[in-house]
Length: 213
Image (cartoon, rainbow, N blue to C red; front, side, top):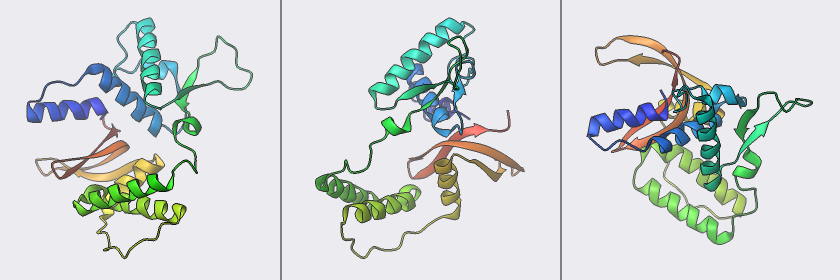
């Protein structure tokens, strides 16, 4: 299941207007590159209809891919070209997220920034979001430690083994194996590469690529 699959499900269930296809495609591209353990070739990307390409006109899809990279760059996400050492110009390129330049380097957070982040996390935790409570608490502890902020005694966070497993799979870009039960009570084992986790009306969801077509 890709981000577009999730969007379509939400749209049908709530009778909301369809989301912009370009936004869906860009989001899918970011999810796939972020979760892939190795760079993806141009062909793997522009021939994939699940991502939003694969129109049958490869030149058009390549132009879409180039525009999508520019849109991600506008939002601070740099997609870099990867070529093996000694590769010829005619050889196919591969693509990955340039994490060194996409994410801020250490030492850029000021004391005021740290206070704002800690206060925002505290307010979110106080609101009772069970889905993000554990990872936010971990982030809070790291910010407090790195910036020398003293921490007050905090109430213990209620951790869910299931939610922790999903977060671990997402953070480590590993496949998640679990027992799935459908509405008829039928169970089967599924394996999913988790692309993202979100919360809607107090219910936690994750989207990803299922091994079952």
